[in-house]
Length: 326
Image (cartoon, rainbow, N blue to C red):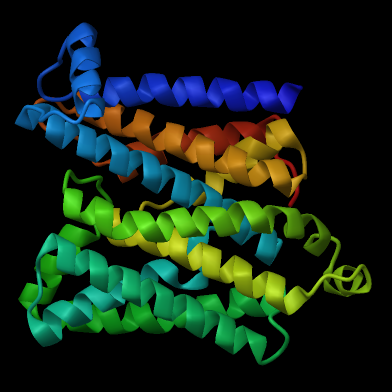
């Protein structure tokens, strides 16, 4: 009952944050006008440019928050590491390296092109990590070590390219800022991958309960460890890869929200994954709105606001010793 009420509370909070994200910006729009605009959008009629841009940005923030939250829960579950986030598996580094290589070799710089390149790079990096780890059984430790090694290599390649080519540096710097943009092409390009990833994440949450007992115990109970881990890595790659490709590396979100979820749900991954997804969506929408308010008429990037809020939040949980183990 408590877990179900928590879901209802998160959904209501997300709806309020969604409305605030559409209404608040460099110019604050009355809530009644915002509601009328959303009704117009649902009816299929056209929207004024202001609402169109804000609505696209808000929807993108919502789906990216869902993706990163679920990916963070899957990453901590599969690595059995409470300090893990999707970047640990080389996904962020793979996306960044692909964007830099595209700018260096082909001179690409458009937002949509960078999104596609980032997604491809993230998927290739995830496949490489799983392939390297699978040589020795794809255990949690080998996943982490393979991810750390690949991250170091890809980061070195990206750093070398941006140092020797100014155009690559400009492209990488624009993409790497970690911001939610209002480009509908980016939204529609990444949305199918996020939807598939969310389905895999929700299914994988049931298997993670068995996997958390250890590979040997999971095998003894009839679990196909290799298949479960392959599905998990694919889900992480789709979710974190699409989110990173769309908005750049938004760090810390995938680390903190699974801990917030465990504080409510306990160690049951059937609930941790959906709670993490909803909490991720709520937190990213709230931080995006705050970023527009504190730096008006400009804005602070969502990744900056998220780190300022999420860091103390995580430290407070540790202080109160309410940080559950994986």
